[in-house]
Structure formats: structure tokens, C-alpha cells
Amino acid sequence: MEITEIRVSPAGSKEDKLKAFCSVTFDHCFVVRDIRVIEGSKGLFIAMPSRKLTVRCPGCNFKNVVRSNYCNQCGNSIDRSLSDQVEQGRSKLHADIAHPIVTEFREEIQDSVLDAYDNFLDEEDDYEEERSTERQNRAPERERREQPAPRGPLEDVERERASEAEFLNKPEPTESEESMPPPDDNFSTGIF
Image (cartoon, rainbow, N blue to C red; front, side, top):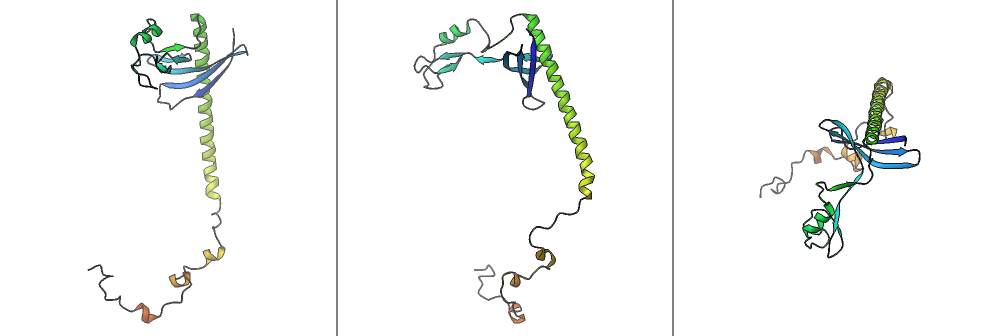
């Protein structure tokens, strides 16, 4: 069986342990999706697609995660013996959906996926470098450009700031009105 295509999709941030999801195509006719690239204590490795083991509630038949004490749907208690039957001595809560049986083939898949992930990172770094040089080249060009045209009517730009009365289309106040003191009603002074 030959690996004919590997697609890499990044997951999360660079600080997360889960680095990417991959889809691997075998012989142009069979695809395994959701292979995860994970950073472990000894470096990168792959995890095959898996599902959580479940046990059904005896009352409402709802699927609950193994080792649940109560049903997530109806709240009834779930007998621990049901979980023990599903686990069958396993210490894990997940079961692989698809996985290689032969160790050599697993190593071949892991090597191919990790190589594809490394190539993806290299291409991403090249793309980022290209983008940063484009930005640097465009910076002097932006400085050379003229100021953008003013928004709104041109006469607003040329006209000096109008007085408040002009703006409100009211007659200009006379000097006698401007020089009048405020009313003596104690309301405008804030003292009651």
C-alpha cells in the first residue's frame, strides 16, 4: 500500500501540544482523516483518529461517556458494571477508528506525515518571509503617495471655521446680548 497524498491543516497556536490535523490518502482510493500531529515530551508523533467509548443509559438509551456515573440526558444513575463491560480491561477512554496493525507500516505513516508537516512549516515560513518583504517594499511607496482627497464638499475644506450662529443659521448676537450677565435665579449657579 502506497501513501499517495498527505494534506496538513494547522490546529491552534504554536504553543499548543496539538499541532495539526492530517488526511492521508492511500493508493488514490482510500482516505484516513483526522490523524493528529502532537508534540510530546520526546518530540512529534501522530495519533490515529479515535472516538470516545460510550455506554447507553438503561432508562433513555442516551449515549454517555464510559465511567459516567449519571446520564447526561435524563440524570438517572448508570451502573458501573456497564462501563466495565465496554472497557474490557482497557485503561483508555478512546478507541481508534482506523489504525495500522503492523508496526513497520505505522512507522512509515508517521515518517511520511511528519515529513509533510515539516514541509508545511517550511512553506509557511517562506510565505511569511515573502509577505514581510512585500510590506517593507510597500512602505516607502505609501510615504510617496499624496495625501488622500478630503471627504465631503470642497468648500467645507476651504472655508474657515464658521461661528456657531452661522452654523445654526441664526442671526449673529449683538454686542449687548453677549455682554449681559447670566440671570440671577440661582438655578444656573448650582446653588439651591
